[in-house]
Amino acid sequence: MKFFDRLLTIVITATLTSAGWIVFGSSVMDIAASSPDEAGASLDQDETPAEVQPVPTPGTTAQGAGEGAAAAAPPAGAATASPAPSASPVPGARGAGLTIPVEGIDASALEDSFLEPRGPDGTRLHEAIDIVAPAGTPVLAAAGGRIAKLHNSTAGGKAIYIRSGDGLRLYYYAHLRDYARNLDEGDRVAAGDPLGTVGSSGNAEPDTPHLHFAVLETSADAQWWEPANAINPYPLLTGER
Image 1 (cartoon, one colour):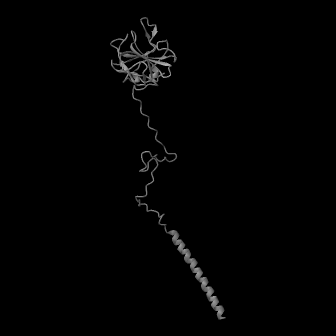
Image 2 (tube, rainbow, N blue to C red; image 1 turned 180 degrees about the vertical axis):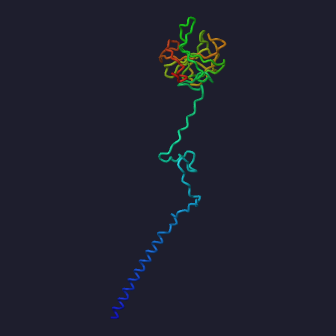
Image 3 (cartoon, one colour; image 1 turned 30 degrees about the vertical axis):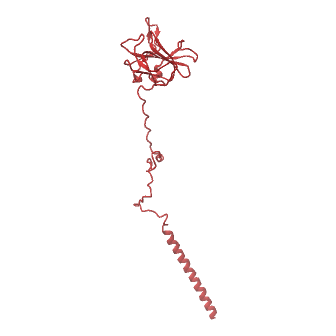
């Protein structure tokens, strides 16, 4: 009987001990779960340690990202600013495909005289434009090409024929006062290169120095002096139609 009483006491003791450990273990786990881990501990709102970088707001660039870093994208649906307009070209430096062949002349100063009558009886068309400028103003190549002829005549005075790279156009510059230094037939020129200066050689009025500028359509095997089809240089220089 004593044996059974002792056995019962042992069983009851063991049961109570196990229950106590279960309750104690659960409490420990709850405590551990509520405590922040050292590596992932959250910061107080007022704490901003040096090693924690602020997140950039939309439309700004993170500090230290460098000049080439892209700005953060704006939130969906947010209004975006219109892109800034591109810079305007330098006045007179460039027309619609051709460089204006007199230095310092703005496209707005050009006049379309392509169809104006010329000659004693007025039956000949001008088929060029005249660009009025003070004598000695630099004359520039309107387009690149090769100098086909340095020509001096009674009508055009000192003149230059330049053939385009594909051979299908001739650019004619007349009434020059002089040629640029070291300019020779066969030389290649680029748009904007100096060719000479504005003058009134040939049959130009001495008191109205100007550049007579013409554009001629030709064939690659035609000579500079052969007849060619004149096209209006005005829209090529101004972009107007």
